[in-house]
Amino acid sequence: MSTVPVRNYDIPELRRLDVAHHLPAQTDYGLQQRNGGSKIITRADGCTIWDGEGKPYLDGMAGLWCVAVGYGREELAKAAYEQMLELPYYNTFFKTATPPAVKLAAKIAELAGGNLSHVFFNSSGSEANDTVFRMVRHYWTLKGQPQRSIFISRWNAYHGTGVAGVSLGGMKAMHAQGGLPIPGVEHVMQPYKMNEGLPGESDADFCARAAQAIEDRILEVGPENVAAFIGEPVQGAGGVIIPPEGYWQKVEAICRKYGILLVCDEVITGFGRTGNWFGFQHYGLKPDMIAMAKGLSSGYLPISAVAVSSEIVEVLRAGGDFVHGFTYSGHPTACAVALANIAIFEREHLVERTRDDTGPYLAKALQRLADHPLVGQVRSLGLLGAVEIVSKRGTNERFGGKEGTAGPMVRDACIERGLMVRGIRDTIVMCPPLIITHEEIDRIVSIIGAALDACEPELRKIG
Image (cartoon, rainbow, N blue to C red; front, side, top):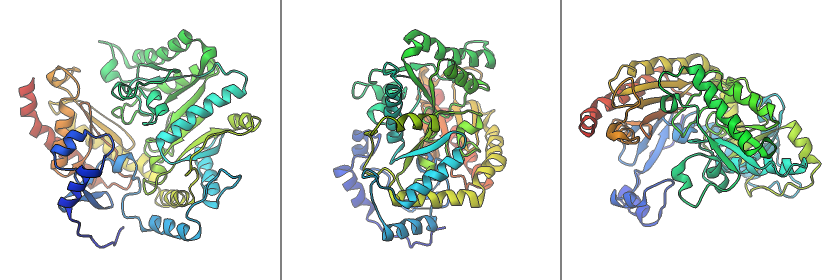
């Protein structure tokens, strides 16, 4: 891991400049100002980050769902350095390509398998899903069916923050900013039985109802008008929503029945997170396209990709220019780092370790919280986990009669105790680096338990 000396930063000055000039992502800027600036993170190693005051935090979120191989990997820094010396940047617009981009495309096609033979590069998951949006619509136009422009997505899905990504996503708070979604996106219920199951409804019946909602919407808008269904194998930013058994098989069957493209958003679930290289492999699916980002480079450099089936590529090849792309599509340094990152995955068997060791260990460890009086459900798949908070066990009742009261409070209590996790509504979610140890998993669970205990008296006052 890292051997870089610790720098001495002027933290008060950085916090002042943060308020004076910096607009962080997804932030309440009034709160940023009232707090006197953001928490300044200065260094990291393994699964631990440190703030400017020298306080360590176990990073239960792998940065933002991405630092799979952990922090401080010198070989990734060296891969960037060596590529920068040779060719730091060149584009792919002028009938050109670079060795790292070509090699990475071939490697992704190998890992994805099946008919996902070609890869288009971008810089972020949001850009990847914008690429999906345009490519799918272009494909159907080339097929002589331009009316096939509608995407079916799910409420509470997250597909990025670009105009297309927010529209494809199903988060109403994001739709409220900027007059979104754009036309041509239909949303249906999510496979989230904890929140949307009916009283006494079995898992099988809920699964059938959630899948039927997709078919019903397809029939409502006309199958001849539907281009694709897009979904995360596990909804990450929605709260680690793990669909019931059989859900994805039903969804795929519906797509094939009506000739609709199946797109899997693997931005979070890709690269070992579920115990397979990709989430669709866990569910045994054969998608037409997949979007990926985050774990592709373990967050060391910005890069994302869209893997595309050979059938779609054959249509694109007959259609002339696909007038879409980004300055940094196939950025050679980012691609070189991604290749080195995948080499670490393979050498250290991180995918298999997640599937056979750390993923099952996390699932077992989370069960220690299942009987806590504030816990309505614990759930996990691979190294994605969630603890859902309720005011009354055995129900879906929330403190204060609404979602989002308990989650931020318990999250902050975890952070105070040295654990970075995310609070999504009333769910504490985790996505630790794939290098995490059993001891560190035990620390995650222990700190969440302590935070729940500490917050319970105040939450009970809320009612």
